[in-house]
Length: 288
Image 1 (cartoon, one colour):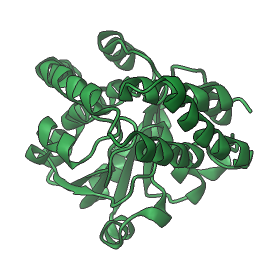
Image 2: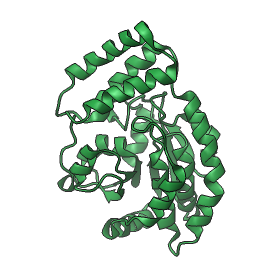
Image 3: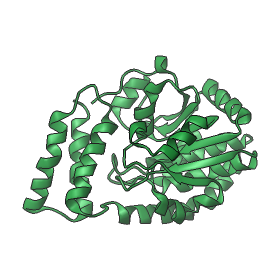
Image 4: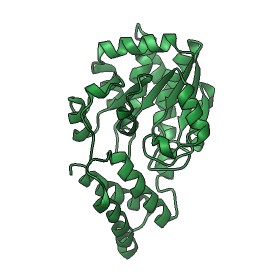
């Protein structure tokens, strides 16, 4: 039940970005409400919002977040030199890359109305990372040849470049995966091109418009790569929601805690930065 305000907030925000109000907006809202009414309380929120946003895109006939994605791709590119410099100032470059990547996870318009990128960077480089998880991650990086990096939002993928560049410098083959179709402000191939992602990784899409990574909706090509990767780096809260229960030990989650439901599932605080291995035993159920 805690997720209901967020669902309705996403509907209102999306219609606002699409420039739709009045009776047309009310009618679209009623269609989306049917998804909420029928949602299982045991379902992860990302599955429900995937269905909501399919209705919103179909009925609006546009990609409502296209403009805001362009704005944040540009803003993030302007911050990239400073991110690289801040990362280089740390003794451990890999840790700096992780912190830079997590800093970009606030660019999430499924949750936020606006974001403070400078504050997020400061917090990401100040707040603690779980030391045991970081050491396990560093070992996994060193022992891996092929890494699959599951991207999250437009703009955020520029922050990811810092970590991707470090992985490439370590001689890793890195595939950066974006969405196969627009959904909220998640990154697509067009955003990857705008962000220069191909300069530091092999860019692919997952063939899906699902929020998070809904494996049953992804393309066969993506699934082959997913199954064969030595290490999977999963960015963002929605990817955590949809992949945490797989128990796949190859997965490490990187994100910022942005809602009380996920905070409770992790026994953490809202606003914490997370780098953690995938362990079902450490995560309580994330449901609507």
